[in-house]
Length: 591
Image (cartoon, rainbow, N blue to C red; front, side):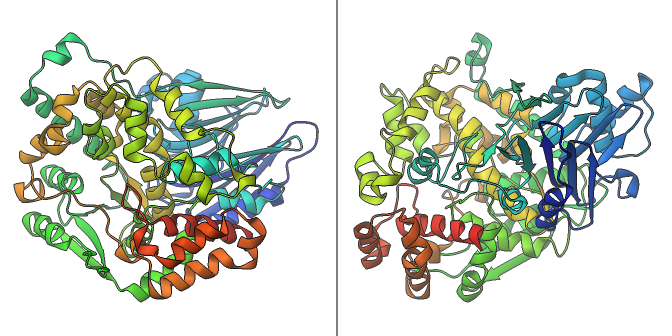
């Protein structure tokens, strides 16, 4: 679990190691334990290390294998590396470390691109072939590990974080208007390969990209979440699905226990994280460290769910840490949380995960987290609205999108508007793809393959790694997701959503956390912006940098300043916080 970066020159010049060094230095928080930079002619690779597996120097990166003619940098964890190592050793490969990193090198040599389909894990990888000069970039199936790219002036730069990429220099920072449309419509989701900056792109999930020495490249997609049902799937009972899901989740949690350091749990008190705690207890893990966070209430809205996390902690006798953040500390830490974002992300979870990760990192280096369960098992409020829909694109947009095109025109300055509704067009293209006949499945597919990647998953990575904390997400085990994709919508949406998962949970955890009202990560101060928070966002949106950029119409901002608590989006977000967060993030990149 680390940060990676590099530069490749498409020509005869040598790579700029100083540029790579700047990018690596900027990711110190992702890998505080060690740093390395290596250069081989036109290719330079950089790495920041967080020691999780093979704590010795033999597992250091960049890792070079002269015998195989390969160099590699890798961010993430391959959970089944020990099984793959045994298989490769039987084929005659010799190992000089006990790391999962070295297993990737040997696996690439043996199986080429097919190796990524064999990996259970989360990863962003760069492999340089010494003889051919090719560079291969790969990202895990759900984009749990990020990889940002910039191509300009005959050079490719890449890094695990967008701010680190910018530290390397020579990048176009102008605003991508299509990405801005997505940000303002789709609750800050900007699908790959775009980012909010024209000069930065991101490698799509489940993709291997090969760069030739002349700069040409080719992408291969090695996996996607499918939502087709066989006749047997349709006929299977709810109890059968419950048992299959529980067994699949047991396997997913067990896989993510692999580490040479202790593993804890981020415990919200909801069914997802509570189920992870219960399954780890079943596996015999003793003195399990669990962590919960809460904030002050605002506008009459409660800011914590401690009553439920306390229940689980007491039930399983965990070593529980309950963290309460006063409003003053929340505001003081907002700049740090925003600087940790590789892209602007509007959900209130961001500051929660940032501060929770800060506290957790004082105790352990690895946690399991419940992200992904709502997307994979049908937990959101918009899925029932699509049942039997004759207009699934419009019904999804009506339930999810923050703004209509008319509202977009009111908010965004004319020079930053698109000539059409780009977010709706993206949705139409995705829903039109074959393989998901049911409207609910169309929504589950886009949320699993797109929304999940560029909102919850990105949020967890950015803010956990800001404190050198590795977060593992068992609900995104690809075999579990494949299983969930086969479950008919009627079972998924039972019991108000996540019906199959809730029934599986009843076999493990107390019913009180299953039958409770659905909770969200509450940070009321950022939903009902008042007092010093209103002063902060007003200053941000009217200062010289914001006026010079001119993203938003002044009349729209004045409306929000006048009644900030009245303009709440369909997903319970503040319109004012959404526009302020974007400007705060852009100004942080300019600092």
